[in-house]
Amino acid sequence: MSSPKKTTEPHVVKEEVLASGKWVKLEKTTYVDPSGSTRIWETAKRTTRVAGTAADGVGIIALLKRTLHKDCVVMVKQFRPPMGCYTLEFPAGLIDENESAEAAALRELKEETGYKGEVVGITPVTCLDPGLSNCTTQIVIVHINGDDIENINPTQQLGKYKFVEVILLPLDEFQQKIDELLQKEKIVVDTKVYVYAMGMSQAFFKPRELPVLKQ
Ligand SMILES: Nc1nc(=O)[nH]c2c1ncn2[C@H]1C[C@H](O)[C@@H](COP(=O)(O)OP(=O)(O)O)O1
Image (cartoon, rainbow, N blue to C red; front, top):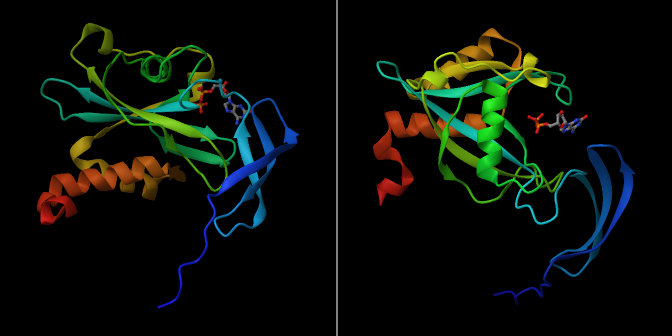
């Protein structure tokens, strides 16, 4: 049996800004790895993070519930400059100063899609792309009463959202409908969306195969 390797508690030593724009900055992160070696990592950060705020932004899983309709997930399609193409995402946005994640979710949902919802759940702070950046999000689960007069003809708030297309996809066919959209259009789906869709397929069609139920 080999002797256990000596390990160090990994930690960041120094963060130096290499370049900074209005929204994003690039840093050189000096850190000590678990073997005790000092190394360098290139890190992207948002400049907008508010001190004391839990996460940079929120993603919203909004379920539209209407009488005589299947429950639908409210999705947004928009051109994303870093991708150079359209993406299919959950509504999302940055959290404002002194704003809770729940309030940000309801505000962003209303602005981007026109729907008024109520928060029914929230994730802890989660990382988005930790090999590249320190960006974090909280996913907020929102229910929308589609029979409510306010939600019959939802109108997006004008301005920057005029190029955001709202797409409703039935929850019980979520993955299939996304796959159809991907075949039809040149569009890239957000990882969070597709993983959620796979989870829904598993839950709807193979509930007995869920690992947690196999024990
Ligand atoms: N990385 C970014 N580059 C930009 O040039 N502009 C950016 C970046 N991130 C956000 N923004 C701008 C665009 C919007 O005007 C505001 C707020 O965006 P928000 O709606 O909160 O978030 P998204 O849904 O991710 O656009 O910030």
